[in-house]
Length: 220
Image 1: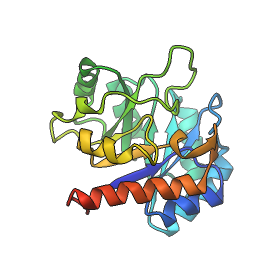
Image 2: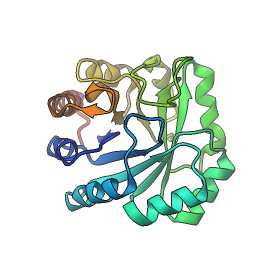
Image 3: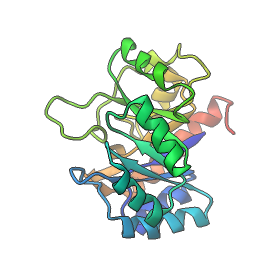
């Protein structure tokens, strides 16, 4: 099972993610987010992740080519996550220009929202299905809200995605059982305050997710 701990800003948080078996770590480049990190800081954290064979993921929101070029050159991520309103054409363009796999985030509330993935099939390397943000939120993700996980149970197996939104150590087993997801992304659910990662919660989340996966007999 692929698990990404997202919104990391400190060596201690990165180490907690890696110690618990996360194989993706996410760094957010979005000034409005309490999880925003400077590229120079993320560069050092990404080195730490790569040394332990985890994939650093650079998360951006409608970033232009100049911003992306700086992030890619400085951080050397293994994947770009586009968490804004990027079109299929934009995703294809970013993928071609920077030579990196791209994960496209899509906001989900009801079944019809899953149809938004269709135009990106064969273009995005992976999807991240996150809950639609509350009406008063300026953040496209990391809001601590979830959607109906049962919507994913009948999703075409060819759709490669990570489940995100409102996950935490207490509900991750239920989320896996209902959705059938094979990959997870968590951020606010392992924090003590917005943008402040809790190493004990990171450990608890990863332990709960791995245990649930093993009980399902699908551990890889």
